[in-house]
Amino acid sequence: MRTGILASALTGALWMTQAAVAAPVGTYDAVIDKTSAACLTIGDAISCSAPLLNYLDGLAPTTTVANGGYVLPTPQGALDSYIVVGAGGGAQDNSDINPAPPSEVENGFKTNDVTNDDFMATGKSDGTTVTAGNMNDPDNNGLVAGDNVGTWDVGVNWLLDALTINGQRRELMIGFDYNQPQNTTTSLDYWALITVRDLDGLNTDMNFEIRSPTGQSNIMFTTPKTFASQPASTDFATVNGVTCLDDDNILPILPISGGQCPAGYETAINNAQSTSSTEIFAFIPELNENLLAFSAAGYDVISARILFGCFGGTPGGNFQPGIGYLSDEANGGMTTNCEGGGFGDVYLLAGQVMDVTQMPEPGMLMLLGFGLWAAGWSRRRAVRC
Image (cartoon, rainbow, N blue to C red; front, side):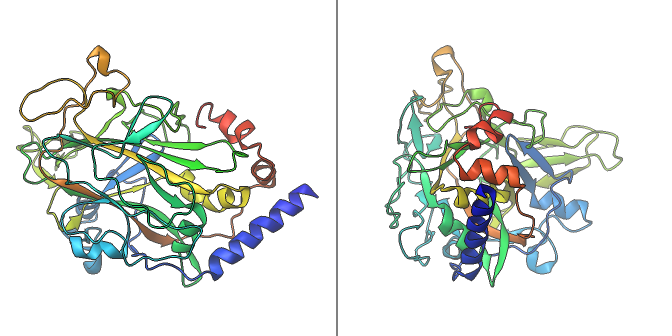
């Protein structure tokens, strides 16, 4: 009977999501093969290079979606059609997205308002609490509950509605417009933690980490991070400005910071094409596939904390050490690829249509519905929550 009750609740949530009027969220219709050599597993996420996807498909690296490729033109003024997490310049954030309460979305952080810092951080944590970082913390866009200083926040149900367009649920995608061509290294270190929270405290937090490659698939990866955890310098992944390819397929694909590819590599793919095109797309498959189940189980808010650039150490120049952002700063831990004058646009968009008829297994539904998620999936994944 309990399983039937929860299944009914999940069916009702599905109906309401499909029936809701979707927010004006931009869509991305090109289908990305996440197993492609252009994609890399980074903790719980998968990141794919649009220029490299183009090249592997026999297209010019700059080919856009409208012309059958993967690069998405995203000039600053066009970002108001997406759910903006962080943006700079003249971006309009998500100002024309105006959902009704109580589940709304927070405006985007301004990523180029930093003065004399070579890093950008939504929030600063001490292992217990999260406070504001050095980016311009956005005004809340009407999220009635769950807004947290130092994180970007969105309602679970609102996000589901936004991803349901013309009655079809679409895949959650993360776009990253890598605006670093003026940087001599054209590389940038980054780390993020996405937490799904139940504001009533009946369900344990679910955490998804975007980090350096671990050699594991996103399904097998287990994060030790919780909502207020500090990352170590070794947790940071790197967006590299150039990907080097051996046309003879003898040498492995080689990402580098920028400049000339080593001997033996004949082709260089530019992953930082311009400030008006998105070259990097990322996915968090487990978060995306379980959004509906999270909603049915009573989870309310998704919160994201993001760090870009150099943290720890004193490499010189106008670098500011960002003391307290990393768990290993006291022992000399540091990241090295800085935010050097450009800015990154991070936003959410709706990808390919999903098959929502594939419901979670009944056992999973029971765990979710009765607050035992932590005893199930979380125990299987050890310390995800």
